[in-house]
Structure formats: C-alpha cells, structure tokens
Image (cartoon, rainbow, N blue to C red):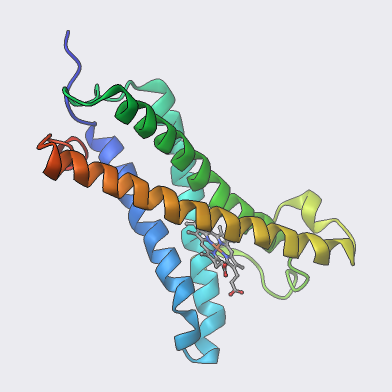
Length: 186
Ligand code: HEM
C-alpha cells in the first residue's frame, strides 16, 4: 500500500503548535525590555510556562515520530536535499528538547527559587530539578550562569536551523513547484 503524501492531522497539530509557541517565546523574551518593570516577572513566568509546554509537546512529538513513518519525500528531490532535510529535522528535534530543557535547568539553579515557585500558567506548581536545586552556593550560581549560556546557545542554533528549514520548504514549494507546504498543512 502506498504511503500517504502528507503528515497526519495529529502530526500537523504538533508541528504548528510547537512552532507557534517557540516563536511566541522568542518574540516575548526579545521584547521584554519594552514592558514596564512590574510586568517583567509575570512575562518571565509566562515564558517558563510556554517553554514547559513546548518540552511536553516535543516529547510527545518525538514519541509520535518514532512510532509513525513520515510521508515519503516529494518526487524529484535530490539526494543531497533529502540528506540535508533529514539532518535539519534531526537537529530541530534536538533543539526543541534542548532549548526548553536548558531553560528548566537554568531556572532550577535559580537562587531565588523558594520565593518564586515555578508554576504552569499559575495553575499548579511544577517541581524544579531536584539534584540541581540541592547543590549549594556558590556552585549553584556558577551552574545558573552555565545553564543560561547553554539555553542562549540552543536559541542561537535554533535561529539558524529555523532559517534553513523555512528556506528549504519555500524553495521546494515555489522554485521546485512541489506540494511541500500541503504535506504539513490542511
Ligand atoms: C520554547 C522554549 C523556549 C525558548 C524558545 C526560549 C528562548 C529563550 C531566549 C531566546 C532567551 C534569551 C537568551 C539570551 O538572552 O541570549 C531565554 C531566556 C530565558 N529563558 Fe527561555 N526559552 C524557552 C524555554 C524556557 C524554559 C522552559 C524556561 C524555564 C522553565 C526558560 C527560562 C528562561 C529564563 C529564566 C531566561 C532569562 C530571562 C531573563 O532573565 O531575561 N526558558 N529563553
């Protein structure tokens, strides 16, 4: 039986929800300095809640991916394009886990953790990572900075992969005239 030429509805929901939440989080953190000071702590809390949601959805998305074959690449794609797309997709999976996970690690090493509980949109408390929280000062302060540098590095890698992913998809859609976007839309 021939494989369908598009992703399933569930895969599309995962794809676009994760994409929208990551973009919202990047825009939110980039623009945070334009907000009044008393709005910044709630905005960082929102950033954390959105990020934790991405982490949960990314785990589910990867479980979906390892249990379901994706549709075959559109006919006419060169071997090098398929290889590049596979590499970019693999790296994107690593980033959608690594980016929120390092944010969570950074936050778990926050010295003000006790006064600022981590919650999911204020609905319930999310435990910090125990072994990180248990580390004493001043090591924890060093880890706080180290994990933040990892978080920022994952964000930088994400910008590059995101650009590659979008340029690749639009090239197939418009230059090669393949039904690329329809595979992940409607
Ligand atoms: C969708 C997932 C996420 C994205 C795209 C994201 C992106 C970013 C970016 C781009 C920055 C700024 C980095 C820089 O200044 O170079 C940042 C900062 C930060 N992130 Fe995330 N992040 C995510 C998830 C998380 C999670 C899950 C947490 C914690 C639970 C978190 C906690 C933080 C904190 C505390 C900061 C520093 C905010 C500040 O003090 O200005 N992030 N994040």
